[in-house]
Length: 172
Image 1 (tube, rainbow, N blue to C red):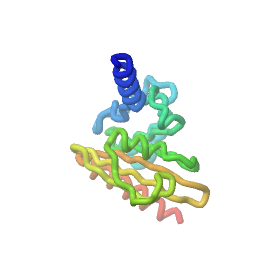
Image 2: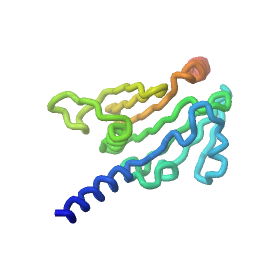
Image 3: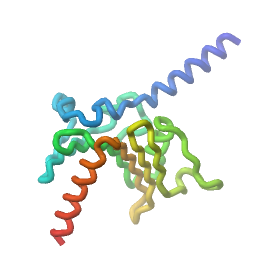
Image 4: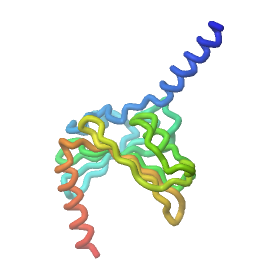
């Protein structure tokens, strides 16, 4: 009986560790300096005081196989972190949904719908952080997006997105 209990305890602890992933190892408002030492970080500056740093999930979450092969994008505006995005497209799984539910809490799907058949969005506020999960059906397959932002930096994010949208419209 003790062996069974011990085995179950080890399994439970091990499964929680496998989901361990600190996407916010860089705090909202921080500068992108922590990425300078990572050889896999790909920085891309824009003309609107923004800088996106894209990094493979296995660099940020080496023990998390759920979101393996997913890119994580950190958006800095005026040298401050304002948004973290995970995007996974054209893969018929629910890896980001599973990650989101394990990390930020489960959310209900419509009765009778499996995870793979559900398309929609879910928003949750956790402290100052806003968590947005989206699963969309595109012409070439399903896409999942997880965005994490912080209410203290939303105005910077909105202003940056406004500048990008204005420029994009002027290019048409």
